[in-house]
Image (cartoon, rainbow, N blue to C red; front, side, top):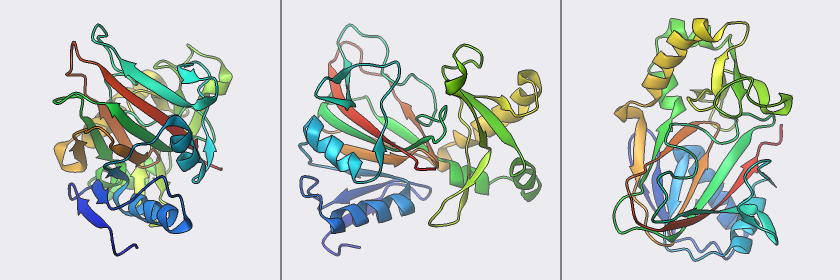
Length: 263
């Protein structure tokens, strides 16, 4: 890893601040460094970047194929893979909803990395919290780990299975192994996971609710404060995130792109 970097872990479970990168220079060493940091910390913040939509798109492209949202169209015609997330002073909600989730689990292949860049940031508030689904899984009993490793779950867009057409209802394993580290993590989330496969919603809810609560405990989470120019990158396969909506009456502007898994 680049010896000129200053890498500061945020918590013992996940997250790091990576200083010393210039993301306008997308050489092989920079891409490798980002990948190594993500494999280790799952979510990283890279401060002091000034990227436009084309530069953010180019960065994402180094890691895979861009996601184009089938329903959300607040991107630019000349760069539709980059969405503008603008919260105006009169807006009461934030993009992404106020719930723990991973991006694009309702497709197969599913979401891999998300890149979120702060353009116009409030002085206070608007933080984003993250959870390590690996740490949450490791804290479960071995018997429960073994049970969950045999299960699949249904993921559906948007919030309730049956509300959307077939391409947006998919089945995924409940437990996934990180392809680099081999560590196992839960692959479910409140926003898009509706039930276990071959079970009803009523039968699934008690265990799902227990697991969701485990993934939201303080000892498996971290929280990032935003500053203008920050770039957050996270691995949707092994993290959840929660956008905190505590900036009423204040403008907040960000741009985001997401990359899909290859298989």
